[in-house]
Image (cartoon, rainbow, N blue to C red):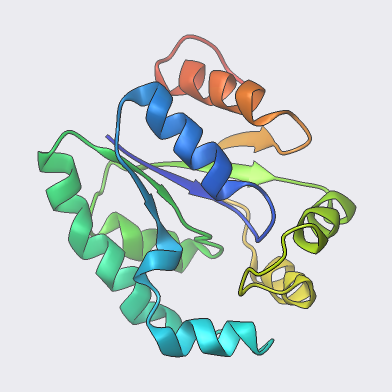
Length: 164
């Protein structure tokens, strides 16, 4: 099983993704590690990425997904903001499950302001929110919950035990 934890910057993708991976006994991968240095430099300077910047990044992750599946699965933290990006990821794992971390703008801004040293600057949130197409087929979790609560609810949903 490949689980993609998605959402805008500051929603907790990496934190929840790592916890979820530990809970499920799967390796964790962060999409940031797949960005070429040019993308990171662009975002660090406050310039939003274009689709032309994103396609090779998405393709690199999709190319790894079949290997991850052969090894038993993985959890990937990836913004996956638009449906076409999620479709691009599904080329690597058609059955992957998306977990959408949805949050209130003010909470997301607060979290970004408290995250020093990260290349994604708080000013980029507007661009991400404008790009976001909420998924129709994802497990949805409210980021106002603690990461532990989110992981428990998502695990239950993935395992069919309950709904969020």
